[in-house]
Image (tube, rainbow, N blue to C red; front, side, top):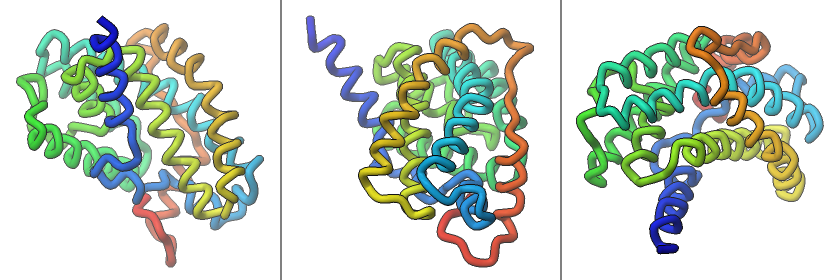
Length: 225
């Protein structure tokens, strides 16, 4: 009986791994520009920035939409998947953020097809986002909805901290300390996301939008967003 719960956990770890071949490591979501502008210059300011985006954007847009995408996948509702994925895409406030969502989503869609984990609820549309494919992949892998949301938030957080380690730069121990501290907020963020009504979905962080749009014109950069 234990295998029935162990295997989905292992699949979630695989899905949330930074080694997943979707190119997530090449995106900083504006963090690179925030470092360039001096807004992030040590572990404390990196934690403030990442924590703000987690609570004001990921918890209010990505996670509640991910829950609805998962539910649409359970119903095999391709139209619902496309609607919620498109709504999340409309929350992205810069061309780079929209491109990141599309490109990582398309990469995961190709990977799911190669692993024979696609399905009728995965429409071939440009509006398909990373969150949409993550939620549907979790469903196919037998991961429960709340655990899928936890895994998505952890994957996002780990990528942001890894970006900060490279860019600020931070030491490896400082990066792990940030992960320990910021991860404590993930369960509460997921709980808030599960309580959000449809008309409450949407989160904006002005600093993120500005940094991302300015990153498009940054002269020298390591990351694509």
